[in-house]
Length: 191
Ligand code: PAN
Ligand code: ZN
View 1 (cartoon, helix red, strand yellow):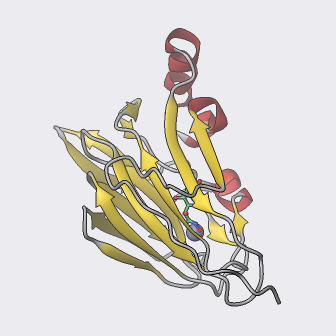
View 2 (view 1 turned 180 degrees about the horizontal axis):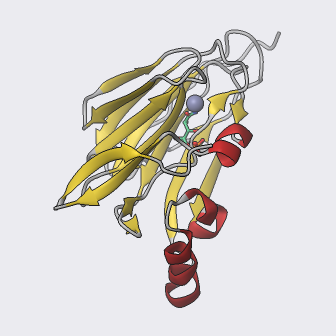
């Protein structure tokens, strides 16, 4: 057990920038082309327009020990790939019994959740929304607005990230731009 010093991070709500960012991760289209329903369009954008930034994460790193509470911001840029809104990769926690809290800082988003038993849920998020991701629910966030969607996440250090299950099976629901609004539809390719 590590005795961790108390610390503070200033959060810029509009950008998600942290004054103390131990790490930052950029996810570009090339990191997730196969996750979009319209893979041909994803490949076309990649070839013709370049490798656009989809989202970035900045976080405070802590020892992976019981009781440590890592936290980070995520900023998803506005846009869509073949009519499917920009989104995070999404994951289950490697330790499925660990939950998480998301807090909206800017913009408009949709939090997609699903369980391995087939339950699904969607939560709309704006600045000020505190969304709870209970244990056993995979989670992906989607920017359904015209501005950056920014939120703050807090979880238990040992939760871990299982990306492989989503990379293999996808999400049950897609969030598409239909008649100017976000529509949640079944993913025809869900494994
Ligand atoms: C979040 C996510 C973050 C990026 O902090 O890790 O929004 O999404 P992906 O991890 O799916 O790329 C979280 O849920 N942490 O557990
Ligand atoms: Zn998580």
